[in-house]
Image 1 (cartoon, helix red, strand yellow):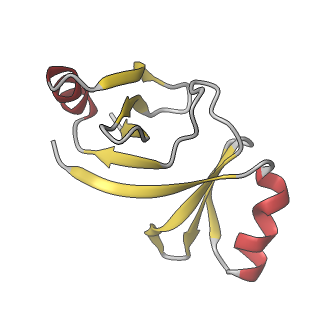
Image 2 (cartoon, rainbow, N blue to C red):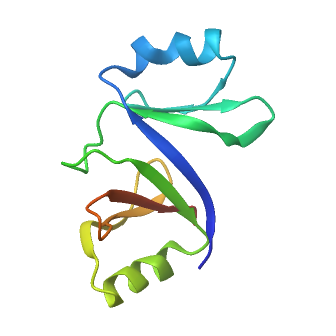
Length: 116
Protein backbone atom coordinates (compact mmCIF):
# COMPACT_ATOMS: atom_id res chain seq x y z
CA UNK A 1 0.00 0.00 0.00
CA UNK A 2 1.23 3.48 -0.81
CA UNK A 3 -0.26 6.92 -0.26
CA UNK A 4 -1.49 8.42 -3.53
CA UNK A 5 -2.95 11.71 -2.29
CA UNK A 6 -3.58 13.75 0.84
CA UNK A 7 -6.43 16.24 0.80
CA UNK A 8 -7.11 18.79 3.51
CA UNK A 9 -10.68 18.88 4.78
CA UNK A 10 -12.00 22.23 5.93
CA UNK A 11 -15.04 22.10 8.16
CA UNK A 12 -17.70 24.59 7.13
CA UNK A 13 -21.28 25.16 8.18
CA UNK A 14 -22.56 25.43 4.62
CA UNK A 15 -20.70 24.28 1.49
CA UNK A 16 -22.93 26.34 -0.82
CA UNK A 17 -22.27 29.53 1.14
CA UNK A 18 -18.50 29.01 0.84
CA UNK A 19 -18.50 28.06 -2.86
CA UNK A 20 -18.03 31.50 -4.44
CA UNK A 21 -14.94 32.25 -2.37
CA UNK A 22 -13.17 29.20 -3.78
CA UNK A 23 -14.52 29.40 -7.32
CA UNK A 24 -14.99 33.11 -8.08
CA UNK A 25 -12.26 34.60 -5.89
CA UNK A 26 -9.56 31.88 -5.93
CA UNK A 27 -10.43 30.56 -9.39
CA UNK A 28 -10.68 26.90 -8.38
CA UNK A 29 -12.96 24.46 -10.21
CA UNK A 30 -15.42 22.11 -8.59
CA UNK A 31 -13.97 18.60 -8.76
CA UNK A 32 -17.08 17.05 -7.28
CA UNK A 33 -19.99 18.16 -5.14
CA UNK A 34 -22.28 15.99 -3.04
CA UNK A 35 -23.95 18.92 -1.30
CA UNK A 36 -22.46 18.19 2.12
CA UNK A 37 -18.93 17.79 0.74
CA UNK A 38 -17.26 19.43 -2.26
CA UNK A 39 -13.75 19.41 -3.67
CA UNK A 40 -12.28 22.56 -5.19
CA UNK A 41 -9.14 22.16 -7.27
CA UNK A 42 -6.72 24.07 -9.44
CA UNK A 43 -7.82 23.90 -13.10
CA UNK A 44 -5.85 21.22 -14.97
CA UNK A 45 -4.25 19.99 -11.74
CA UNK A 46 -6.58 17.89 -9.62
CA UNK A 47 -3.73 17.07 -7.24
CA UNK A 48 -3.91 20.58 -5.78
CA UNK A 49 -7.09 21.48 -3.99
CA UNK A 50 -9.12 21.57 -0.84
CA UNK A 51 -12.26 19.84 0.29
CA UNK A 52 -15.07 21.55 2.21
CA UNK A 53 -17.12 19.35 4.51
CA UNK A 54 -20.31 20.49 6.23
CA UNK A 55 -20.88 17.06 7.78
CA UNK A 56 -20.08 13.44 7.20
CA UNK A 57 -23.04 11.26 8.02
CA UNK A 58 -20.71 8.40 8.90
CA UNK A 59 -18.63 10.27 11.47
CA UNK A 60 -19.29 11.88 14.81
CA UNK A 61 -15.84 13.45 14.60
CA UNK A 62 -14.66 16.19 12.25
CA UNK A 63 -12.37 14.70 9.63
CA UNK A 64 -9.22 16.79 9.23
CA UNK A 65 -7.98 15.19 6.05
CA UNK A 66 -8.35 12.39 3.56
CA UNK A 67 -5.55 10.03 2.67
CA UNK A 68 -5.93 8.27 -0.67
CA UNK A 69 -4.14 4.94 -0.85
CA UNK A 70 -3.34 2.45 -3.59
CA UNK A 71 -4.95 -0.45 -1.68
CA UNK A 72 -7.54 0.51 0.93
CA UNK A 73 -8.10 -3.11 1.98
CA UNK A 74 -4.41 -3.51 2.75
CA UNK A 75 -4.42 -0.20 4.66
CA UNK A 76 -7.40 -1.35 6.71
CA UNK A 77 -5.73 -4.65 7.62
CA UNK A 78 -2.53 -2.85 8.56
CA UNK A 79 -4.43 -0.41 10.81
CA UNK A 80 -6.20 -3.32 12.53
CA UNK A 81 -2.92 -5.24 12.96
CA UNK A 82 -1.31 -2.20 14.56
CA UNK A 83 -4.20 -1.81 16.97
CA UNK A 84 -5.35 1.60 15.79
CA UNK A 85 -8.94 2.52 16.65
CA UNK A 86 -11.21 2.02 13.66
CA UNK A 87 -13.79 4.78 14.04
CA UNK A 88 -15.83 3.70 11.00
CA UNK A 89 -15.54 0.28 9.34
CA UNK A 90 -14.35 -0.39 5.82
CA UNK A 91 -17.28 0.14 3.45
CA UNK A 92 -17.94 0.97 -0.18
CA UNK A 93 -19.98 4.15 -0.44
CA UNK A 94 -22.80 4.76 -2.92
CA UNK A 95 -20.66 7.39 -4.67
CA UNK A 96 -17.98 4.80 -5.49
CA UNK A 97 -15.17 5.04 -2.96
CA UNK A 98 -14.17 2.42 -0.43
CA UNK A 99 -13.11 3.95 2.87
CA UNK A 100 -12.67 3.66 6.60
CA UNK A 101 -11.93 6.11 9.39
CA UNK A 102 -9.01 5.51 11.74
CA UNK A 103 -7.92 7.50 14.78
CA UNK A 104 -4.23 8.40 14.81
CA UNK A 105 -2.28 8.06 18.07
CA UNK A 106 -2.65 11.85 18.42
CA UNK A 107 -6.46 11.56 18.30
CA UNK A 108 -6.98 12.85 14.76
CA UNK A 109 -9.61 10.99 12.74
CA UNK A 110 -8.35 10.25 9.23
CA UNK A 111 -10.57 9.23 6.30
CA UNK A 112 -8.59 6.57 4.40
CA UNK A 113 -9.91 6.18 0.85
CA UNK A 114 -9.36 3.90 -2.10
CA UNK A 115 -10.90 3.79 -5.54
CA UNK A 116 -11.54 0.16 -6.45
